[in-house]
Image 1: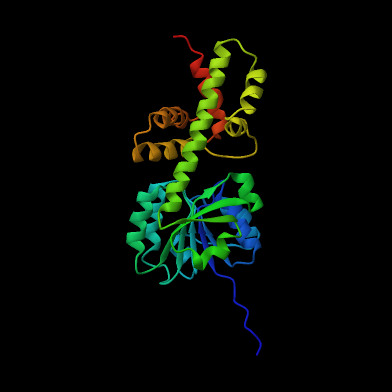
Image 2: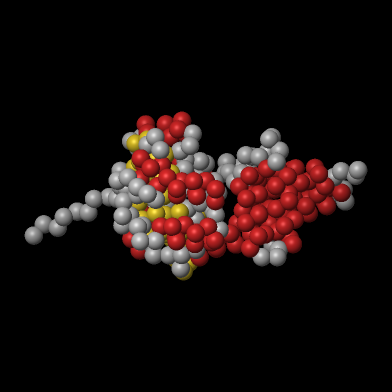
Length: 281
């Protein structure tokens, strides 16, 4: 008997920012029927030209989807989309929440979705370059068996434990990264104050235990906005008493409050921190 080939899942992808667009493109290239939605519809145009369908609303995007993926800016955006999709999403579908929102929000969403859809929290480690190459780290919490092959299209899947554990580990990973980048900026400000050559100080730091943070502090062609960094460090600082993280959060919050740097990559915050540290008034 000839075996029937399983059809690729119909996927609704909600949120086409710096990370969402290349991630959605990976799924489209893998042959999945893809419906996309974004608050600014014009951002969907390149994907529509490649074969995706643009939905006018989150609810319209998810009605016939087997898998719903959300990649949004933060907790408020995810809650708003949840309000729109949960009444209409197909019963038995999977909802893969890939934003960075923290485990408490995942628990809240899981309670709202219970009995209707399977919620998987699967935030990602890596920036836009890894997203474009399909080489992200996927931190998957909860019952991810039914979507593991979909997530594998985006990168390497690490099972983290029960629902919420992916979101928790993502908060840990991001806090380490952002704290390291802020520390690099401050120690370079110290080098400036001591009259050291910038390149000499940077080379020495890159050869030491902060090497990875030094690399990210000056990375090009990647994107992690100051507004998102402020959101992530604030989430971490609310979860535990973390004085060092609170100090880093203040740096990123100041950058996020400035219209010139709010959406700039965190590498721009490094020069901002150094400049502020140099003031003597």
